Image 1 (cartoon, rainbow, N blue to C red):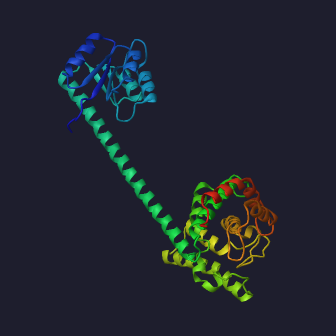
Image 2: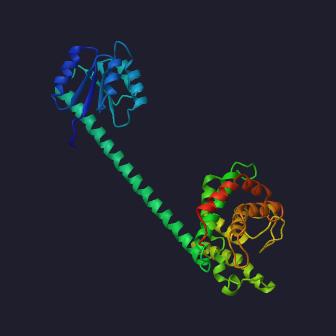
Image 3: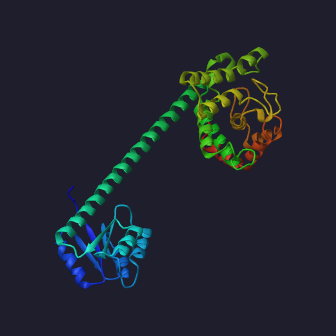
Length: 364
C-alpha cells in the first residue's frame, strides 16, 4: 500500500550521531522530528503534526523509554501510532522490556539503511491500514446508527398515526396523544428510583412504555360514533359498549403477537396499557375489576396521565377544568382510582404537567 501522505516520524535517541544517521537513512521521505531526551520527546510529540511512528532508544538519560510512551499514550496516542524501540544487538533484556512496555517492534542496532527503511515503511503502512480499517468501522457504525434511527422514527410515526386514526373523531387527538405520552414519561421518570418501582422502571422500559402509551385507546376504532360522540350521559348498555374499547385494543395487540409468533416488551406494554388503563386501584374499574398491584404498572401510570388530560380538556358536555382542579380531583382519588405512590409522584411533578399542557394546547 502506498503512503498517500508524508508521515511524521519522531526519533528519540541520546546520541547525536545516531539521530543524524537515522535521519539520513530516512532520505527525506518522512517528516522527521529529533529528540535526545524523554522530556524533549514529550514536548515534540505534543506539537502538530502528531507522530505516526515513534522510534525510541530503550536507554534514555533522563527517563525510562517505557514511561515516555506510557505518558504519551495516556495523553493522545492510539492504535494508529506505531511504537518501535531501538536496542543494542543481542540485548535480550531490553528487547523483552520493550515489548512489555507496549512496543510494536524492536530494531536492534547496528542495522543497514535498507533494513531500517523497510521496517519503518512496513510499520507506517500497517498503521495506515489500521487507520483506514477504523475509519471504515466508524463509517459503518454511523450508517447502522442512522438506519436504526430512521427505523425507530418510522415506528414512532406509525404508532402515532395508528393511535390518531383510532381517535380521528376528536379534532384534538394528536395533541391529546402527545400530552399523555409526555405525562406518562414524566411520571415514570419520577418513580424510577422508588423502592416499589425501581426494578421495573429502567430507562429502557420507560422508553418502551412511553412508545406504547399513545395506543391506549386504539380500541375505540371499534366503538360506534353515536356512543363516542354522544353529548349526554351514556345509558348502561351504551356504557358497556364503550367499555369494550379496552378489549378491542387488547385483541388488536394480541393479534399482532400471534402473527409474529410471540411477544416482546413493547407489545406486552401496549397490551397492558390498552386492556387495563381503565382499571382502578380499589377494584371498581373495568374490564376485569383488577385491584392494587394486580393492575400492571404501565396501566396504572397511564390511568393518571389519561385522567389528568381528560380533566383539563374541553368536552361536549362540560368545559375544561383548571390545572389546580384537575390535580386536586386526582389527589382526592388517591387510593381509590389511582395508585397512591403514583399520585404522590404527580404532585411532585405537577408543574411539569402544567408546562406540557401549555406547550401542546388543544385547538380553540
